[in-house]
Amino acid sequence: MKPDVDAAEVLFEFIRLGNAVKVTVFHVPTLTEISIVGPRTASQAHLKLLGLKRLEYVLAKRRGG
Image (tube, rainbow, N blue to C red; front, side, top):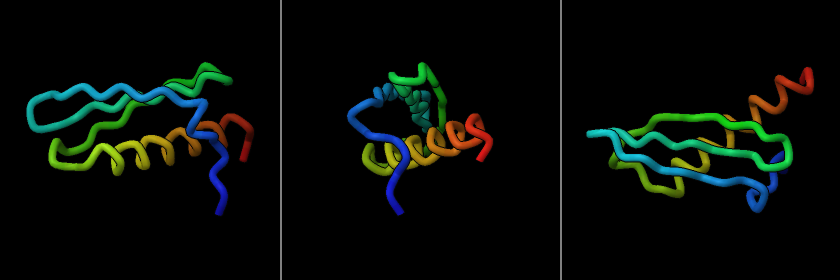
């Protein structure tokens, strides 16, 4: 399955909060921002993947899909 979001159009911010990491994902073309929280032990690549999946979900909901 091909992702709906081009990762080149996405900005990520990682903020450590105790034993957790807050990841903010910003989709530049649509000005959409989402946040997820994951464990501090998770890899940055895994948190990015989770953030992209959540962003795709939110964008699909906006399109009515």
